[in-house]
Each structure stands twice: as structure tokens, then as C-alpha cells.
Image (tube, rainbow, N blue to C red; front, side, top):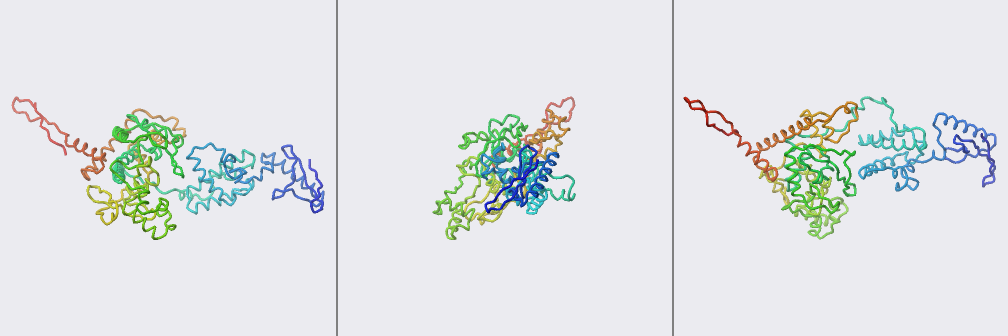
Length: 544
């Protein structure tokens, strides 16, 4: 029942407030757009507004859309981060149970959401038009598919706000079959670059040459023939390498801080990957070379992030000593050269050139694991494209090579470019490490592998009805392993035809074995019959 209250302000002026009974049984006050009680000059006006507010509240409650005014004014920022604005132990973000990798990703998404024009608006006032305009701006800025991710996270946040009665509907919900149909095709991302089995072998050889050890050769081959994710490969522990399979139980996820977190694989995609015999052999030999447990986790891993024996690479500290500066100054020259005086910068750059220092390249003795950026810049990109990417203070440049032994050995140290006699042609420019997973999927498609086995191997979940009635059988696994082995053998034959030797020890052994197997193949034929003499001696000939 609506009624009024007479009040006297601090200025001595009498005013009236409208009061009404809310659907939750409590009594509310008529509020303005600023969330404050409205001061009416007369009792009649106050009573009329109170009755109207009570009628609207009851009507909204009847439709299931009534929200208490005190919670209706909660801003999006306060809901996400809590009243203190920190997101620590309060707010929506703190209430989420996330893995370390997801927590970092959500942090990036939340930052973009809190940069919106409506972040400080009450949740009840946010409308779909504002969200649509924000998503459109993000796409125009080149965010592409990321804009859709930001909106999906905002949808999740506002859905929880609806459940907590902060508003009645979710304005981030997209209505289907609206907008331009042409926009569906233009929203596609760039085509993923892949390569063939031979391309994978050549990339693996180059990666090992750049790193000066076999680790990168084995890792590249393993990923290309298993479809493992980067973190799953870096975090592979020897105990999960079996005779005929690889067990995916953990990954090492690199946070923005540089910390490598041991956590379950993405989307809890635990799985067993069937391993061809050639891959199992490479992995067993790699495990025999792997070092003692790392200091960061106290565990032993299949792959290392430091240089192999006989490959001594200068460290940041070595450059600092040579230039008579601190390691921080060297870091500034590499990443923020404008902060360093010209004379000091030239001295540091000269020391870098003299020592042949490669920032992040091939790892140093103190590094237990590869870092994404270092591996991409100094191993993967030059291996697939033949060029080092642009990285301060140097521009993009071709890998300087000494032409012999084929396919070339990187020239290092001062004047490397002048001493170079060759450079690599690109194998697949623009192919990323993740492209190896796409390449593996393409190889399986080429072999006619059933989708259910491909999904299992890649760690993908298919919730369709047809997938429920699809099952992996032993003959399927055997056919896939046999097909992958044939592709591997064919690529080795093709590589041997290019050049008979390799500076990579692991590949050199494989080529020698392949050559010996080729030369040992014989064809037996019975000799022609002469009188009563039976064909008892076979004539052999080598098959090229």
C-alpha cells in the first residue's frame, strides 16, 4: 500500500517522499535516476508517484522481471571485481574456480571488458545496443575472433548477474539470424599454413641445426606425428612414453610472468596417443640424453631448454661483462633501446655481434625449459621461413649459412652475414608451431582415418549424436600407425635423395640406416634350366 512521508531538509524546506510496498514484502522509496530518494513538493504528487511505482513493481514481478532497486545500481566493475575493486577474495572473478592458464586468459578478457564505456554503469542500465557497438569497435580494431571471445565472457558474467537478481535479462545474448549473412564468411580467420611429411622432416632438421642438438629434431617430429600441443610436448615426462603409445597427463603452461605451471592438458583432454615404432625409438634415445630433474618442478622431462653438449652459447651476463654494463642495461638495449644512451647502446650492440649472442636462442645452461617467444624467434620461424624475425634491436634478416655440410650450418659471431655463403629457402612461410597440429590432422585425413580416432588423438570432444555411436577399434589404430610409418619412411627416402648426409646426428643415423636397407635389398631369380640340372643357386642383384 502506497503512502507518503513528510520530511524537512537542512535548508528548512518541507518536502514529501513516496513510499510503497515492494513485491518482496519490504517498503521501498521512490528513487530518481541517480539512485537517490525523490523530494516531492506536495503530498498529493508524492502519493501519486508512490502508487505508480508500486503498480510497476507488481507488474514486473508478475512477469518475473522485478529487481530490487538497491542491487539494481550495482555497476559492472563492482560486480566483477567486488566493492574494493581488486578482484581478490571478492567479486565475480574471485568466485571462479579456474586453472592457472584459464585464470590468465580471463584476466586479459576482463581487462578489455572493463575498458568499455559501460563498465561503470549499473548492470541494470546496460543494453544490448551498447554491447553490439562495443563488439563492432573491437572487430574494427582488428581484434577479429577475440571480439567474440570478449562478448562470450561478458555474456557469462551477465548471466550470473541475472541469477543473482541484479537484472532480469541478459543483454549480451545474441539473437540468431540477425544482421548481414555475408558477415559470416568475412569473420573467418586466416587460413592455417601446414606442410607435408617431408616438410616436417626438413623443418625438424633445420630446427636441430639452429639449436645445435637433437632435442628440437625429435620434438618437431613428435609433434608432427602425434598432434600434441606445445605445452604437452614441453611438459612430457619420461614415464608417460610407453612402448607403443604416449600418455598425455600434464602440460607446462607459460604464464605472462614467465612461470611455467604444471597443469592438466587443455580442456582436460587426457588421452593415449598411439606411437609408431620409429617415434618410440627417437623418444627413447632422447630420454637417455635428458638431464636430471629441473629446479622449478623437481621433475625430469623429455626435452630441455638449454644448449646441448659442445654448444656453448653466450648468456646475457656474458654480454654485460664484455660491454662493462649491467644485465639490465643489456636487456634495455634489446627491448627498449630508446632508454639507453647512444654510446652505451653501440657498445652493447658491438658485444652482442662479437659474441654471437642470440636473445632467447637455443637456451642457456641455466634454462630448464623452452619459452614460447624464444623458441619461435630463434628456432621455429627461421627453420620454416629461412629468416630470423624482427626483434629489437635487429630487423628481420635471412639466416646466414655456411653452405657445407648441406643443408648448411648457421654462421655465428661477428661478421656472420659477411662470411655466409648461402641462405635457406622457405619451407612454409607463416606456418606456426600450432600449424603442426593442423598438419597432423591433414596427414590423418590423407590416410583416410575415421573421425572418431582423429578426435581422440587430437584431444577434441564431439558431443554430436553420431559421435555417441562411433567407436575406435584396434584395426583403426593399426591402420593409422602403419600409414604414418609409411609417410615417415617415404619422407626419409626423399630426404636421402636430396643429399646423402646430415649434420644432425639423429637424422644422419636414420639416413645411414635407410641407405644400408636400400643397398641390401635383393631380388632372387632361379637360373635357367640346363639339362637335368635343377635351379639350386639364386642369382642376386642390388636394387637401387
